[in-house]
Image (cartoon, rainbow, N blue to C red; front, side, top):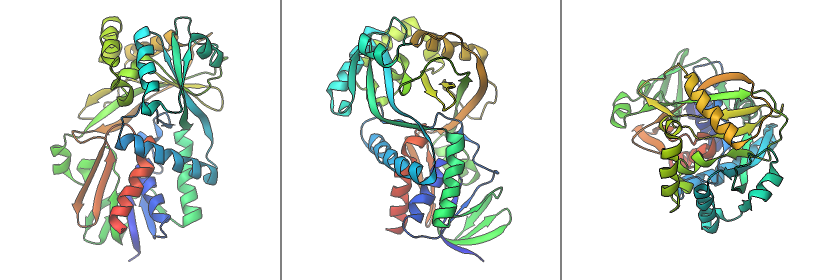
Length: 371
């Protein structure tokens, strides 16, 4: 029976982050993935490594560390970084007040507050109503559906990580791991099942009320606009913890509830990213349920595009792709990290910050398992 130091179940970003952390320690690592390639939460999002606006404390610290690892890995694995930095544009004076308070605090260090003219100099297509913006130099964005396969190939080539695709892990009995094609032995196991916690630990899934968050996403044909970085707007300021903690955020939320209650009700907060082909990835909304609802709403897409029109002057809007993204949420956030048996850890990000924080989480887990 083959034996490994660490076996990882799941080849999404959380699983690959644990594989990387272990491989860098010289450990023998295997990754088992039930699908032919990662196809769930990790590849359906923006590929946006977000720093500015993250909740202060562990989440922000993990994001800073993970951003540094992304820089190292992208260069080594040939993963393209399509955008760097983020422009948070304020349409309302109350939103500008939130940005001013954020910029004046410790989390705003290194960011630049821009008035309306300076913001438009960075992005001439900003709508006339924009009051100003905050520029953050910290973010980076990869194309997730390309980056994760490239990361897996590099882990295999550089560190000898063994990948078993289309091979589901069925159970763990002591050091023996049963899978769809047989069994292997491992000194430690990390289960990174995303929303599939109940497959391994049904009582845990019930206890933490694990459920799904569905996001509606779109890709737009390349317009004649070049974004200086990923773009966000007013609705993001009441959703991201670092912004929402500012004193002015309460007044902004009250105004948004009066002016765009449907968008708030559907969890819309605008993010606009740009691919290497010039196309725009636009989203998203947030709907919570105990199952992965496959059905998207045209009305919600219309709310997202309405926010886009309020932020950018675009000559045309042509949607070329639509899809749903998903991530798990639970009463335990931002990370569910549970030892479900001796040297068996179940780890899933329950806050939608997997791309931003997984590398740091992987390092923490591997350090706990192997010292």
